[in-house]
Image (cartoon, rainbow, N blue to C red; front, side):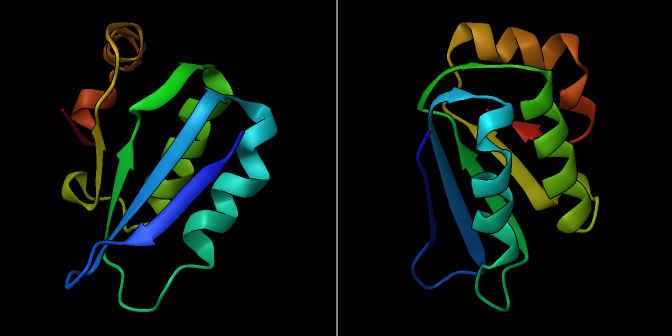
Length: 101
């Protein structure tokens, strides 16, 4: 799985784009994407447009990112989920933890 991370121009927001299957094999690369990011980043957008599936370890990685970002609901946003991913996030009650579009 490839993960692309970049700062959105002129902002303090990092966009992280996982690709393929978001699972345990992505852990190290996902963690590096936000921990080695630029200073001054205060918000993260996880663009799930190219994610086919995710498992419980992916949910754990999202929680790890939320903790890293300060733990507030507006510090992490998940976007562009397919219906299956949205259902997984709904069942896991992630809507109460972070913004999901």
